Image (cartoon, rainbow over all chains, first blue to last red; front, side, top):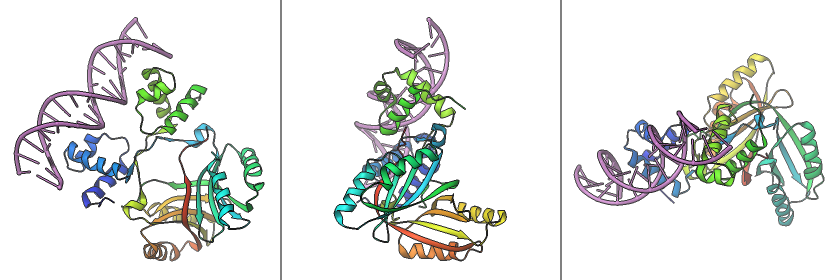
Length: 153
Length: 153
DNA sequence: GTTGAAAGAAAATCCCT
DNA sequence: AGGGATTTTCTTTCAAC
């Protein structure tokens, strides 16, 4: 595990806030030479601290108008049931996030869909009917106040 | 608003799944010339469909070990109270996401923190004591099953 | 062990057919 | 839409602190 210095943190802050700038410009902001800056970035990439990402896609502009958060309760919390549920979720492309949350039997999903019909169809066929699931409670997103990948460093 | 063709969709699928490849390699996968591929990508960038992103940072590796989802109820749903709450949230760096969800008075937050002490401190000083907030219910993330930006296109 | 300058390779961008 | 030239950026090497 790599030790993160203050210089590294400074670099991370600069990188996060300036997605479109070149390494040359980023290095200037950090008051370093390009190569010095590059070496630090490379080390952090190798250590898995910095993860190269595909560009984001505006989900609304490609027709995914609906976003929802869904809390799932399983009908029991045995290892097998959880395994079955989790691998089922991994196969659902409309489920972007899935976390096991405190409470023991509960999962929280982030789901996207074209519209309400699409969402209902999705839930009926792949969630509500699934043998591991006891209940599901959905909250629809009405407005996005904030959504950032900028971490407090 | 730009019209998205099947070719564009094909490009989006390829881009999303291959974050580290060059445009030359991506163009090959799409069976197009570099310049043709590049033109499509550029058009989608200009239309705001493709959004250039800073590389992701592994939050756990920089010491943010705790992630939580927090549902907030405001003490009333007047325009002013909501405005005040939302601008307060925008100023909190530990809150990565904030959505207004169905139900009317409710918001859902995604919060990161170093550890439980940090989270408690954060919640006490900036959430629980805030004059607009009636209640807050937190679910801690115990395990990440899935977290992707890969949209179903 | 870390930094910086400069050369080399590779990729992105633009123009023209 | 495709080929090719130009420009920019990334990556490596090597010398200096």
